[in-house]
Amino acid sequence: MPLIRSVSKAARQLLLTPACGCEPLSRSVRNISALSRQVTSSDASFHSISFSETDHPKVLITGGLGQLGVGLATLLRKKFGNKNVILSDIRMPPSHVSRSGPFIYADILDYKNLREIVVNNRITWLVHYSALLSAVGEANVTLARDVNITGLHNILDICAQHGVRLFVPSTIGAFGPTSPRNPTPDLCIQRPRTIYGVSKVHAELMGEYYHHKYGLDFRCLRYPGIISADSQPGGGTTDYAVQIFHDAVKMGKFVCNLKADTRLPMMFIDDCLRATLEVLEAPAETLSMRTYNINAMSFTPEELVQEVQKQLPDLRVIYDVDPIRQAIADSWPMNFDDSNARKDWGWKHDYDLPELIQTMFSIISPDSRLTHAN
Ligand code: AKB
Image (cartoon, rainbow, N blue to C red; front, side, top):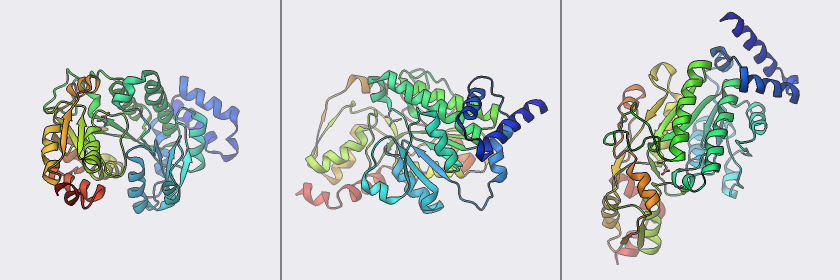
């Protein structure tokens, strides 16, 4: 469509001209974007034309103070340099986070603030971690809808307009009771029953739609429950698998809010962050899809407890089931089929359950075995 292409090229020229950052213009371009914008694939690819292969990407991480942001920033900074990775959040960063590299206030619901950050810092990759998780989303549906859906729309528009490669995590929570659960393939029925799951299916579909319609370089992994030692998840259904380590070490007692036989896919944080980097770096031609399942292991609380008790035999466990979390978990995959990720871009996890246990204890309490086994 040559006419559409040239209109879109002209709009992009205006966007790219430094003197044109004035509000009336940005507003009108935003309106094109929101209503009748005809972005073509050239909009999203202009960046790759000017972005030399030898340059490092300039990365912005939203929701950077959640479970994964600081770890991902550390990994990316090692590879691309400290100044090239900006963490952002609406919360106050702890001092060690501000000392470790660039941090900026970014509210994903504030379109102009976000766009300024992307433009002023010449962002080329955006990792969109801001989201309310499954259990907390059910307790605050309106906020979850705003953050997970409206916030995502802002991110999609800005990334499409400025040729930014976009990574959005999805989740095992994007499946529901009518999906095959053991195993769950990439392509199957997705009818989740949580606002979190609905918003993540929406993100997958919108990202893929923007990819096909506007050439947005959208990449998405469906994460299983992520287990980390020095950062806490917040408000998820799989959080128990992190909490048990801390409570076991600190108190020798753990109250589990899921039934003992609830099987869910899980992954150690280092595998998750490496997968994220790998899919971001994967040559576009290796990606036969834009949304992939990734997995490492699957276990039940009972199986996890048994492994933890090998290190801390005195650990006492009580099951006090939270019906909301249990209903969510019962609708999620038990095993995740990630064969497409393995085939297309060589995904391979490093941590199974024994390595996970060993690593978690070596970080949380190197001498915990001595403390509790005596
Ligand atoms: C949650 O439990 O909500 C998350 C997830 C599996 O997406 N950890």
